[in-house]
Length: 69
Image (tube, rainbow, N blue to C red):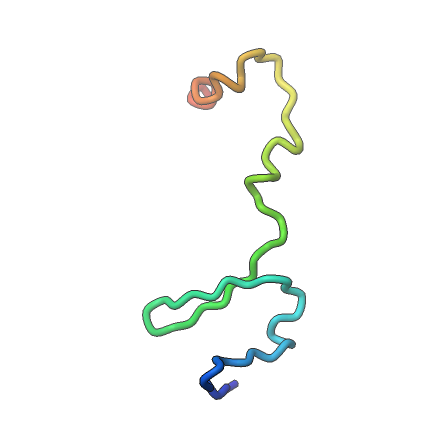
């Protein structure tokens, strides 16, 4: 597919963006890359389903416990 670049920019056909609410556009070398962005921030999902454990101090000493695994 070819598209004409105008003074206003470039129009991307909606069928190529079907299912995406937001995209990231970036230039890498001589390519323009369009990457879909998920609606959910993975960082905000941390702690939603915690694992049960008997360690009372796991939030303070998690590195120590992970190094034992």
